[in-house]
Amino acid sequence: MTDAEGRVTRATLLQLPGRPGWGVWYAHTAPSDHDVSVAFHAADGRLLVELPGSYA
Image (tube, rainbow, N blue to C red; front, side, top):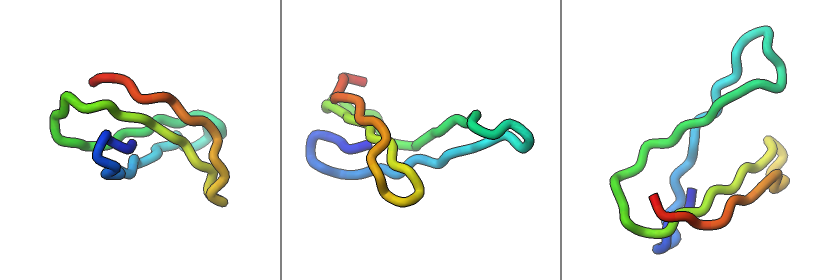
């Protein structure tokens, strides 16, 4: 996630054993009233999807 000031927070991806293709991600951030955008990248760095900023 990237906030309005450009600070990047990395998320952790969890995948269930025996359930390929299923996963969930989470990230810890401080509370904020600023705009946040989310981008998902493949292991090779390719951008998979980007969600526009939204207010938390």
